[in-house]
Length: 307
Ligand SMILES: NC(=O)c1ccc[n+]([C@@H]2O[C@H](COP(=O)([O-])OP(=O)(O)OC[C@H]3O[C@@H](n4cnc5c(N)ncnc54)[C@H](OP(=O)(O)O)[C@@H]3O)[C@@H](O)[C@H]2O)c1
Image (cartoon, rainbow, N blue to C red; front, side, top):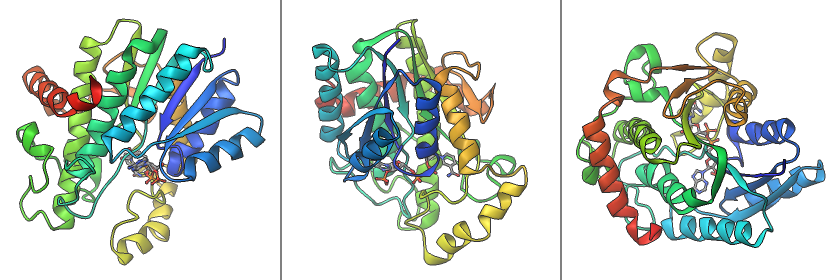
């Protein structure tokens, strides 16, 4: 039956692959792309030419007013019947900055704004619109483990502190450094997993929410702001790691994300899917007290955009 799927982060990287795979797997679906600049309209035209039903709404996840407006636009189109019933939301967009000093339009630390707050505004503004047997998928990262086994020394681990601090720039030592930017990234992904646990407790039982970890996927745009050497390595040497079990290709990561979205990968609400199967996330990611506190802070910070 016809339904609406909303996605962020489909304009490049493995999210682009996933968007087409999701449409292949549910040809009756209408895909709404939330994307900044002209990338969304270009991708919508591209996919429409291939026969899929796709529209885009300009959305900058670094500006929560833009996220709210996009959610309201979706809600209005659902209410008018222009869009079929809402069944899926994919929060795949993510950002990594080269420091912990970049601010979003609203003055939040930019990594936390994109990876945590933007998804919260989307979920909170649209949660009443989901119809039975719906699924939200948020792309997280095994960087949240913070150990060599999971990040191969490529990303510093998370450093938890009070969420009011995490939402601000300069939460970590030497905030001007790439290391601080990496800590902000892995901590934001840990925060996203904590919130998935809290959403799973709070969302209506017919709406489930799952975190998807793609593993290391070289060649995407995630490190596009890194120095020239890192970018060169990501383009040349790192893709060779996809020949080993250490990394996945964008095709593999996109197909696996689509499988979670389509419900082909078994996953309970609140769970963490590592590439193809549900596994526990890090031990520190299960902490109901921390999750309640994070929820309260995120609710407070986003209230101007959710109520
Ligand atoms: N690559 C990896 O090794 C890896 C590992 C673990 C987790 N992840 C996660 O996987 C997801 C996809 O990442 P990727 O590697 O495919 O990176 P990517 O190529 O940089 O894709 C990121 C996507 O997010 C969108 N996005 C970022 N900031 C945005 C903003 N302010 N407003 C609107 N859209 C925005 C990008 O749109 P634009 O085209 O406008 O920039 C792009 O579509 C992210 O959540 C990332 O954290 C990646």
